[in-house]
Image 1 (cartoon, chains in turn purple, brown):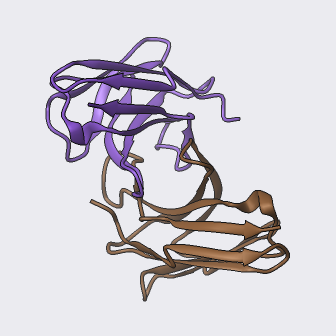
Image 2 (spheres, rainbow over the protein chains, first blue to last red; image 1 turned 90 degrees about the horizontal axis):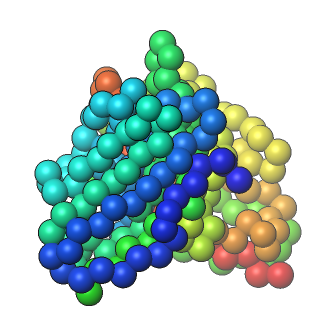
Length: 115
Length: 113
């Protein structure tokens, strides 16, 4: 157990809907990253939040957005859902002081199915 | 996009045998990590090797890194049924501002009891 929790564990939505996924980072960690993992693929970086600001973004459209709260928990929001958004969404936390911590600690993921 | 590929895509062995997985990557790195994923759930960090290291051990795990060939291997010795999982290599965001991980495509390991 890494101490990173995600909710919900599973979610079914239809095309065009919006979804919010939640993540609580490990105690003492101030950096949260989100990854999308399609079936049979490795995780792909969506974006990272550090001290409540976006600190880097992967190749994902603007309808993928996020938030980080003062307690370092985070949300991933996806608008106008498409079928290809069906995937496992992973949250990872790490701590950053003078330099980002290299090892990330992953939550169990939220499996999203878009019909 | 993925950083690179892992080989083989799938591997089936008997308990007690050794399992070797290979990872190739495309860009310069500061470090390379290996993660395990059970049944499509969260990833668990196994080991990190830095670009100036050639070999590292952790329990039954042995990782090698060849930066000239941009490749790494993970050896699991004396495998157990509980080692059944997907294994991913991940490189760092070399020269970037984040600590994002760039993953390979993964190797699915099945250890038969």
